[in-house]
Amino acid sequence: MSLTRRQVTASAVAALPLAFAATGTARAGGHRPRTLHIAGDSTAAQKYADAAPETGWGMALPFFLRKGLGVANHAVNGRSSKSFVDEGRLDAVLDAVRPGDLLLVQFAHNDEKKEDPTRYTEPWTTYQDHLRLYVDGARARGARPVLATPVERRRFDAAGDARPSHGEYPAAMRALARQEGVALLDVQALSLALWQRLGVEGTKAYFNWTATEQDNTHFNPPGAIEVARLVARELPRTRVLARRDVRRLDEEIPQSWIDWPASATA
Image (cartoon, rainbow, N blue to C red; front, side, top):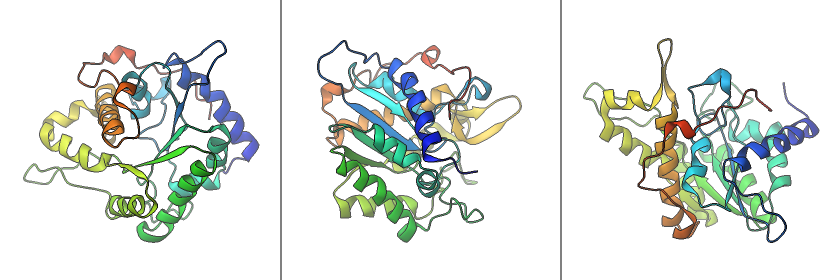
């Protein structure tokens, strides 16, 4: 069921303290700190206690950013670039965006679902059309849009080689980034290379494999931390952020830093 804009806006605002608490960005007066907003799906989203140990990479991104640079994680399970817009969630995000902020956009996992017309987009037409709404909306508010290709699933062939799973969507996003002059974080290529290095067995330690579940799409804390590290490394490389804006890129991040709140707010 679609939510009204009022309901979505309220839930987005309610979720913001969680994102900012992780970064320690509150200030008494003075200049408002910049915020990195994430619009995306379940691979990036905040998870809650009933889903642990499943972890979205957006939960770990603040560990790699300097204090004073906040993260507002608006990513939601099951959403595509289309359904996120149709439910009013993009409007809610843009209402929270301020000049100088960043809007990082990662979709495709659910855009690929042809059986669901509420989410499906075609890579070279409606997917790009919807991504432009994020790009144009951010720019209209003085914020900088950043496109991130979808993180790869855990998929290997019989020879043990990591295989791509997102079809034409990453290529369509890369092309759009070039056309629109938008910074691109190629998380799909980077994560595929990481899974290749880790191998069939090694990757199991990064995905949400438990005694009752073998999930090759979503991450556990180590996986979320490593994908967030990939994202953080790309931010200065693509000149989205300065090198001083990131930290701990080569440090081990304790899994205990991951926190699953008691209940969902959206």
